[in-house]
Image (cartoon, rainbow, N blue to C red; front, side, top):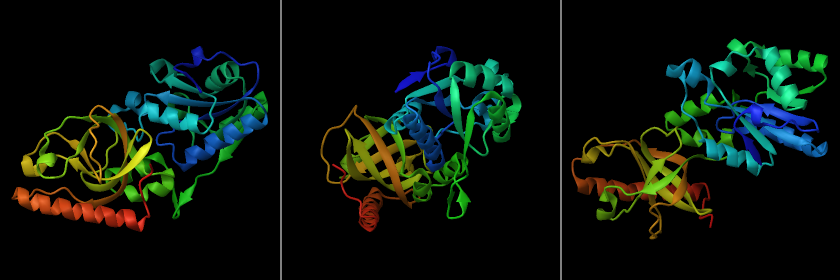
Length: 314
């Protein structure tokens, strides 16, 4: 899969392309449907599938105080797009110049001139161009005038509620990680590197892997049943997100106790998937009380894994 950091770097292909466009934060089921349609049609027509996305998120430039934390980091987004067969991704730098482009000019200059557009797949609620003036109906009209097709993916519902990145983000921030799994088609995960910590867990009989996360969006502080992915192998684990209040308020940390595991993995890149929240973070009066609770947390996590029939993926 080719990745271009600006539309100007994308060499106009001789053959027509099938495009889908959006932020694609989280690559949830709605995003997956858009991409799958673009990839399938491109293969059918023996042409290229192109994902057109933006970096940074437009709100980070236009209204920074309202800018969301990203559900997945850039590299994870690229990896997921590559895994479903996308041929090329344009990661357009979203700056003041780009934000000022009128919607119809964007279609003519970018989609038609640079991408040689044959068809575009989009969600019904897509807005684009200066002041978000362009929408799906505009693209359908321009497609008729300029000779390209428009495919619409209607909102996908889970338990009667529309899937959206903002809804997923809200649930993760509330610690309701199990509720986002049906919307993402996977568990919410964070990526990072295992780094040295205070080694308190080791002294209590629960050695933990401390993660320096590269993913922006973390779940609400608390204890979670998790799966740690290391070198394409998955390990059941119990993880803490929070400030370790028993030892005094410190910086926010992510620590994973990996069940039945004894390897040294300092410096290793890992992914940590959040299966279910077990409890809130609490301050204990005595270290011994915390150790007792940690044993209970492990049993609670094992019960979650048994109920969901989750086993080691290796």
